[in-house]
Image (tube, rainbow, N blue to C red):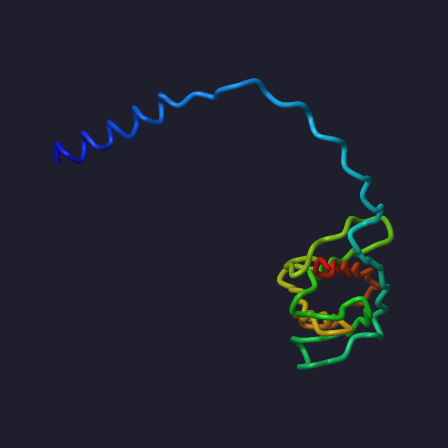
Length: 140
């Protein structure tokens, strides 16, 4: 045990005794300006009316497909879906619960070219909803 403690002490002393020698060199030249852009982020808002929902299981599950051609590789794209319940309301990130009524639930399935919104409740939404789909493809 004494040998281990002595070894640790010698290593610590050897690192503590290191110093920087010489003056700091001159600053390097400024690099070229990079391309402007928004990192290829694509975002769009889609209004879904009450009649757009398909019954999957009566009295419990409803779905709506939203086409988005920006989703080209579901395994690599970063996809975010949110919902706004009115024209002046904030967007709520999905999946989420208790958005339209107590006990309801929204879920999202991403696929190439579309997202499928699932709504779990006793009936389909009775109001128009705005869904925002944001897609960030992988870096090239």
